[in-house]
Image (cartoon, rainbow, N blue to C red):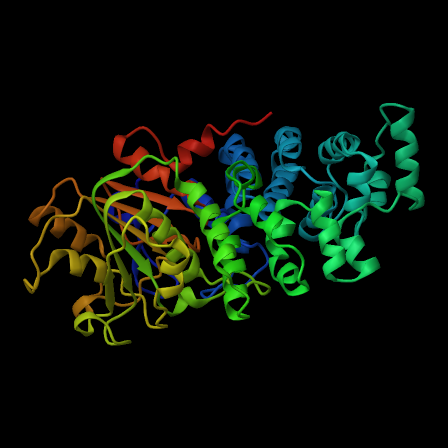
Length: 492
């Protein structure tokens, strides 16, 4: 993946005032965008302002990249709000890319209302002509059912989209449809929300909804708890959730499955059949990935800052995402050792050193690995996995690792022996002692804008999706990186 500038001017301090390395513009923007629920707080402070500032700079330096990043975030990572923010920056700062951006990120009618509301909040009025023109084209792609389904309340409604953009209807049917939007006379759509609202959250209603086939994959997953509690027939739901083709089409981030799992476990509603279905859905995500050869050390950050939730409405924490991606990575590694770390002395662990070592087999449940990982709440001592790898006290038979994969927010705030330095020195030492071609892959979970590593054989990745994992082999082969993938992401 992209490598940091190796000059001394690249040194900086992270948000916890510990030594770190700066990221270049694209790397910083990518890590911030792909690790945000925009508008939600983070442990070390929001990255929303960083995203807007970086996107504005990128709009001037490389607007094509910014356009592709917005489309990548919306389509490959299913991140709606941040794609709307990037679209607004493009509409204001690089209007010639507005058409391509809007065409690729407006997937649902409410994307249009969100973009206009976002622009108004960020910049006020008037709305750019290029934005109005493309939204006027976009609204003509939707039929009555789609418009009615997403004709919701808010500061800006679908009728406001028509009033602001003044689209010329492509035919008489579309003209009649626009009139219904303006008059608020769209036919009430058949959706799980309208049916539950009208008839109640009952077994009979859910059985009817499930049998209709009109409840989408995400709705089934997010309502799994309600469906189980209602007593409805769960078998057809689990068949959908575990169907490989539907899993792939759904493009769900892995933590959505883990969130459903945690909810059912916490409420004692979990059954073997549900567990198998959710496990199968996660397995589908990695079953066709190329194996990562050799010995791999997977380093999962379970420190205090990783205990922050990804949004106010979610029960999923950053450490859950790190543990989940670490477990999924172990599935595709030929030989994996998992190290959970925080800081020394903060919890009972191997030798009191602040880390726990686990070895998982190919048939261990991904969900159970995550559930059994330890969250400690201590500081972030990122050199502990490297301390284990170096085996300086000679406590074990050393067989060199080929790589380490960090899943962390990268806010290192303590170090072995209290030395005020980055972890890069320990990596350099490991290469001298054991393996000169040792790789470091840093999967950034929070996008704060700094890293602990630099130089050759360092691969920076970011995001909450299993799609980050193939970049490990690609980087080591020298044929691909996350930034390169975004630069080449297809847009219409």
